[in-house]
Image 1: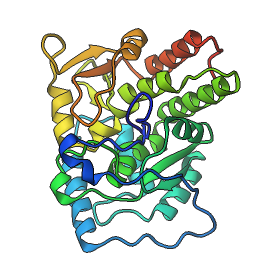
Image 2 (image 1 turned 45 degrees about the vertical axis):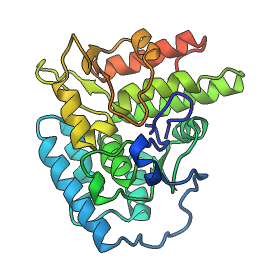
Image 3 (image 1 turned 135 degrees about the horizontal axis):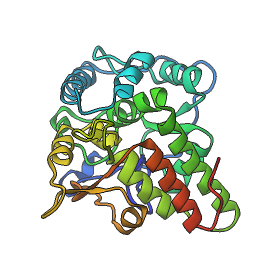
Length: 283
């Protein structure tokens, strides 16, 4: 998704560009659904090697740091270290599992377009892969961020899929009522499905659920080692009022990471946002 209150989404998919790397961003484009039988996606030898480096590093780092559903989703989708996936095949596999489909995009999509896609259960996915020099940290979404960061939980955790869909549906309803909900919902998604953590049932170390953390070694280390109080970066309990009051840090590391007690708390938070917008929560 996704990255800025008014232009980030991207979960969620607007391209964030670090000041020193502004040349790495792909141009903004209008998403287009796969139609018919898409031709197999071709990747270069360099891209395949970069994918393997990223895949191996993140799967090793996420052991005991990501929910079991994340690894279940990797297996269900057939994602592996061997090569980046064919997005047409992956979209069909995701649709068969969940009813969601992928929308290929070369660059950014607006907040409104991203949220509208979520309401239709369509997830934008970047078709470009970062350079090898950016394997440790990339301040924005690319193919690895979108596929590895978002899709496993989307495929295997119903609450995650419901959270995204309800956010999109709420935005659509508010649009019909003439109310601009995108900034609030973008900020909510930013601090949850991009940079969020969950407290595991046993109360142990926080589990990573945000795509930007799942796909970035540097940001993952930063979030999981952040203090619960004191100087930033810090981890704070998930509270809607605090989330909506916390700006998104664009093109740089986050200073605050929010940790929710579980998926139920995140879904309740979405209902809270709906109430603040003066609309019934989406069922």
